[in-house]
Image (cartoon, helix red, strand yellow):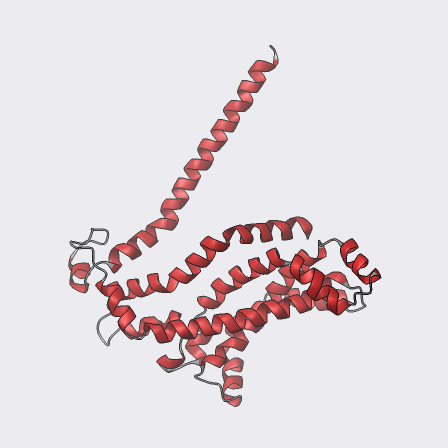
Length: 285
């Protein structure tokens, strides 16, 4: 009987904790969902209705004409360029990160720690200080104002953090599996592709989602390395909807929604792998 008040006290603490957690989640939902609600609301209005009405006033008629205008314009050019850059850069990034992380995580050699330290130090380099050198390099390589000019910088500047995350993840994979394969005659090359690479799928999925969002929303290099609409990606598609004296805000909002849909869908279908990969890397690393 003496333990009954203790149990009740613990139950009250747990219920209070959950009430605070739910309250915090609701507040955070309002903070994060408010701008998206405003985005959808504005995209349903006409330019005149947006300028004459209040910001959060419901549109008189919910219309998708802004989305139709965006799709009928040059949206598909920007979208195809974004998909092309994302697919090639992400494939190269994941493969190169895995190749670099494997020896750092699974092999012991003299330069292991110095190389790893240099990779970690490279994470602190801001991309903006490399804009001019990359610009000059793209002109020298004759890729300026082409989609191909965006692939190299996206791979190079996302490679350090990808190697850092994947090294921590691969370090936690059981060495007994690899040693058993070596006893059966499996060399390092086959061990990487047959054992380590498949076992690192959660970490690779985490990198794919994380870097996919970064590459999809990349603005600086697109602004510097491209000039014509045919070579630009979605972050610069807004230029199509601004004139010398006016900006069509509802059209831009519709464009932003269409641009964010692929990443939102990617996160919805891959959020479980993202969470598993982050937790696995944190525990094993």
